[in-house]
Structures are given as structure tokens and as C-alpha cells.
Amino acid sequence: MKKFILLCIVSVFITGFAFGQDQYIFPFGSGPNKLFIKEIIKLTGKERPKICFLPTASGDSERSIINWYELVHDLSVEPSVQRVWISSYNQDVTFEEVLLSMDAIVVGGGNTLNMMAIWKAQGIDVVLKKALEKGIVLAGGSAGSLCWFENGTTDSRPIELSVVEGLGFLPFSHSPHYDGEEFRRPLYQKNIKNGIFKAGYAMDNNAGIIFKNGKPFKVVSIDEKYNNYFVSLKDGKVVEEKLQSIILK
Image (cartoon, one colour):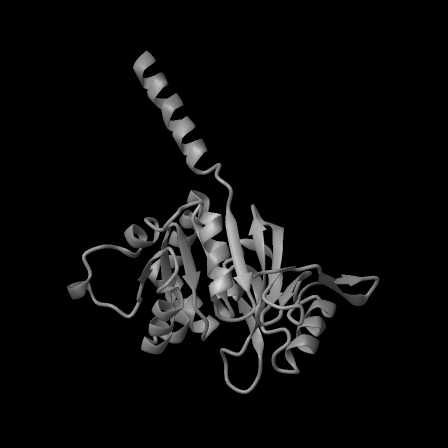
């Protein structure tokens, strides 16, 4: 009996330690760049972290995969790619085994709606939740930023932008490419005003926010012309607050 109790105590201690680590999510308004990858490396606390690229939103595009390896080839990382367009005949490990062995996971851009559907069908959404709880850094731009929030606007359907539901790891709404197409900004604000979205974070291309344990921790940009915003509804009026960014060098 005493041995059983001791084992239970040890189990609780180990579980509490594993799931008590700081959780980092780093969404940015557009695709990754070297400066953002360097921030991800710092967040892992490793000299040469294992970073996996998830190109699901682009349909595992070869171009996006090549761009990934070109981006990180001279950085201190062990890069890899996890495709989802696979078959049992050429895979000897599960998605969970691969992703939970990483120090960081970077999600690429593309069709957010299709990506979310595939992740749910493959159980990757559940694996990513486990990765966050384990302390693996999660990051990405465009579709790779939208996915971490509750919801946001996406160009994943024909004709016009529409609402897409994310994983909800960050309890806010989101708009990437805030300085992109001229209709993104007013549409995001309209959805907040109409109660479709709760308050949230909008990010210009080349700007992003590091969240620590679900709260903004570090606001960054590669240039002063790219900004991050907190957009909310106050007294029936949409308020857009520009956040002070650290310019990465």
C-alpha cells in the first residue's frame, strides 16, 4: 500500500512538472523570417533546437518546404518537415511521436479552413494541444497564426473573406495581414463591433506577438512601419490600440 501511494505521489509530481512549464505561442502576421526564427530559438532555451515545419495549409507544397529549408539553413537548428499528405506505406512513426519530440513547431501559411479540417481528421489538433502543455514552442504566420486563436477572418473560401474557427489556445480573435488587403482591417473591426468576434489582436505583415501562458509577453516587429494592435469594443465603439514593438535586429 505504501509503495502504491509513493508511486502515485511520484506520478503526480512528474505530471505536474511536465505540464507546469511555461507555454509559448508566437503568431506573426505573415510568413516566417530569420529574425522571427531566432526568437523561436531563444524561446526553446536550446543551443540547437529541433524545429518542425507544418506546411498543411499549403497542401504540403514543395515550394513552401524548400523555402523553409532555405530560411533556416544557416541557423542553429535541426530542421524537419511533417507532411500530412502521406500513406501508411511510407510512414513508420505517428504524427504524435514526431511532433512531441520537437522543441518548436512552425505552421506555414495557406488555406486555414482546409488545414483545420485536416488537422481534426488526423488528430493533429489534439497533438498540438499536448505539445503546448509539454512546453513545445508553437509559432506561425498567416494561417499559421490564425490557428492558435479562437477565430478570425480567412480567405479560405471563394469570393470573400469569411470567419474561421481556430484551436482556441489563445482566447482572443485575430487578424493577420492587417496592413495587407484594404478590406481586412474594416472587416475585422466590423466583426468585433457586431459581436461576431471578441476583442483580439491584429498583426501587420512582419510583426508578431509572443504569448506566454496565454498572455502577451513580447511584441516584436522587423521594422517600425509594421505594427501590432489590440482591437476591442468600448462603449459601442471599436478601439484600435497600437502596441509598442521591439524592433528585432
